[in-house]
Length: 480
Image (cartoon, rainbow, N blue to C red; front, side, top):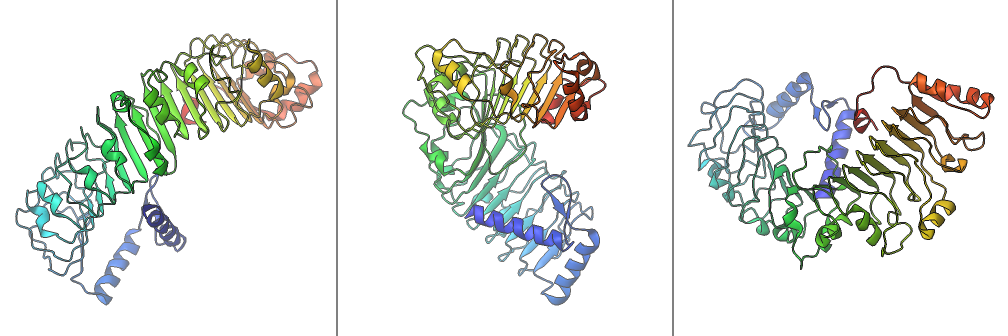
């Protein structure tokens, strides 16, 4: 299984790091020190068969025609050279299982019959090259398990792949592909498919849903891809991690194989019943310029949702007439971001497991925790004390109060207030502030706060962290 192989790989890497044979490099990468690498190659050549491996990495090669290749070679590495072209007639390599060509930025074209020389190839890495297409001979690699094409910024199409029955990983991250390759439904062993952030347009999910061993999916499609009235999304229960982007969104999320994230841009999410059904499989949901959010939450329950980011949407978080009446449609939500929501006056219900709230530039927000007009919703506020531990408020000029009673902040540990000059009093008492560890803000805001007891302010002075200078708008988005 892909998951087991991935975990074995991580365990092996950590063991090598502990033994100082590998060291951390960039995010998600490790590297081998040059001296360790040279010793490893020397050991391989001295005590092994010198003809089984060809390592010609980082030596500024411009062509490989003069490199002696034995028919018994198993591993070939031309990583990070200056290769501009590959030979039309490459020596036959019937035993080669890995071919590494990543980092050859000048490589633009691969001869049509090049891959016929590698019938036993299992791993092929062409990442960080300038290729625009792959030759049709790629379809002859019936033993191939991993095809890695990361950051091939000029790659805009793939040839048919119907014969790649053993392929488990197809990683096309940071390419400009316009559609899925023909023959995708034949890749029955595929575990990971990464086509992000390529905009595949109106791609049908039918081929993807037929990949019964698929566990990780990263893809970007048009909203019309989710409009099949007879479509069911139950196949998504097989996925252990995914990031599905719907619409022309440009938001970047750090790679995380275990997150089940959906990002929707400029779409009517409630009237599109098929899309709202898909959203219920997400653990992390990002909504940007979407309509119908209020009804979406009122008529559905999102049991798996833990992270919700809402930007430039129209929503009030109040009760909806004719709604399902469910008191907590987000029972497991832990983190909530509300950004640029112009008609947000207050939040009248707080999911019981919510731990962190970030609110930025919601210019009509007057009061954070408010009573709703619906008796059901009011009962929720009265009976459930928010368990929010972190509250971050940015540029809310109309905000005057965080709400009553004082128990609304009973569990609060960290409070950040920037650009909220109207907030002059915190609903805190000696009893409810016992968990407070950090209060961040500008010194002038802190000095103007009103307190019922000066001694109480003195007790909190050690918690205050002064933030001087201008705090960039959206600074918190990357630091929360």
